[in-house]
Image (cartoon, rainbow, N blue to C red; front, side, top):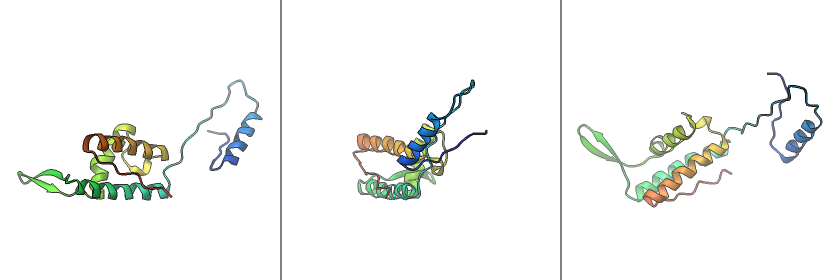
Length: 135
């Protein structure tokens, strides 16, 4: 697809794009504008994995273990960051966005998954862990 693309990271860049669009003549076929949010940042990725660690700690401190059938018996396993990601985060993410990898989430989607998981944990388990700063 031919056209003009802008990568916008600042208010000035956004205003320049708006001015450029205002100056364009609209052809008989018009033109298509598409806004895509950038993928999650490295800082947001780090914050997400820090959240997995903090939540694993909170679940363990609350005495909530993972119950798993193992050799015909129930094994009680402590929460780990990996278990939080695989058993709590990923199912919500996949259900909401049909995305199978956290690397595919955009910035807004990370926040949306956190909000759903956090609300459920607070309501059902009385556990609230703030999402770490992405800075």
